[in-house]
Amino acid sequence: MSFQPRDLVAVLFAASLLALMQVGHFIIYNPFVSGPDGDPVAEYFTLAQYVFPAACVFAGIWRNSGVLNLSGILAFTPFLALAAASTLWSVDAGLTLRSTFLLIAFLLAVTTTTRAVGAVRTASILAHIMGLAMVVSALLALFVPSIGQHNIDDLVQGEHVGSWRGLFAHKNSLGAYAAFAVVIVLAFRDRLPRWTVLPYLTAAIACVLFSNSTTSLVAAIFGVFSMSVALPLMRRTSAQLAAAGMGALLLCAGATLTAVTMLGWGELFAGTKVETLTGRTEIWTVALDIFLSRPLLGVGFGAGSSFARPVLQEMTFAEAVDPHSGYLAMLLDLGVVGLVLFLLPAALAFSRLLRMRGTIDRVQAVAGTALLMSLMGAITEVSPFLVQGSAGFFYFFSLVLLQLSRQASARPLESAGAGTPDANRQPPRPPNSPMY
Image (cartoon, rainbow, N blue to C red; front, side, top):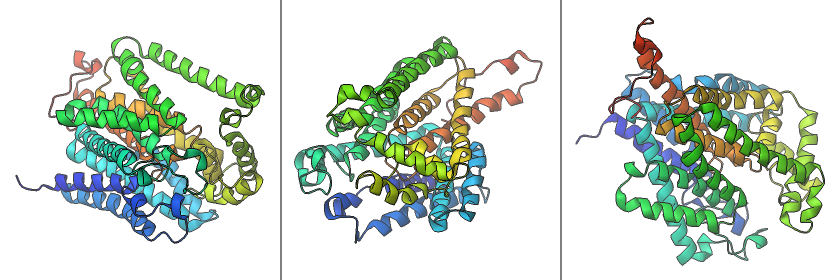
């Protein structure tokens, strides 16, 4: 078999994911052990995060005879325009420019790869990478604990001693990747070699449990529930019924969080980490005050956390390196306008899913689940809304897949005559469809 341009696109996309996960970085040099200064390899991993997605896009242009496919990022256009424009008022124009370039490059890389090899194969590539990362992480934690676990020598990590971190710098990173790995390996297990499924899934579940990351455990449970119960209901019964059930679950979680943080119920958990959600409520109070100083358009895309860090550390504690909420981070970055435009693609995607009664396929189900997991995780973590954050690329990956899947589903309807019976019915997608 000859090496085709689409194979190069797939290889470069896989390399992009590995670069964003920084696989190997923290084995060579872990800032939580040695301190953040003088990291000898960080610049190379950062460079790879920009180079590989851009190379993937150029390979896709080569495959398509010089044509750049923008269809997967149309819903992001208003936000991307604001992010690019924020360079003009950013407190760190260079950081804003790099952050905007990375986001655009990754969105285009997902679009390019999905168009080149199909959505299921693209997701299968991700499932392999996630599964292998979990297996290696579990083996490191078990047999090389000085690398794979937090230890007493870690800077400001004394309370995490014994928690697994695997290939990554911190337990929360391992937990986040593991939660998504559980969902995607379960969903695409028939696309993986049979002998890989059990090791991938076992390692992913172990990493979720032994990372001791509560957020990741909740996300994994919610993801499995969504895949196995809620989203299938949208195929078999009523989308509105399934949405009502998921909405009720989110409402209960939100009401509980509000009660604990706003109504003083935290006294019930006095002396435990739950009292302030491991210090998060203190950070959020200060971060909200910073946001109110520039509420409309923020301080520039990607610059909000670094802008707020000195104030957060002065007003709270040294570990407050970011707002510990993706929503707050986006408010700091681009204000209320930016947060609305950032969440707009997700709102449009879920709106389309709710209208697709009985026609949701596996790609859409997995993407919808990953999107919900990201939206939940972003309540207490910044990384779900960052391409280069811990499993942050899943948010953007999922939205692009939903956008392209919608277009592929709509294509047969567009070719049907307005007066024909087929014009109002979703026909089955053939096995060799571009999305498969």
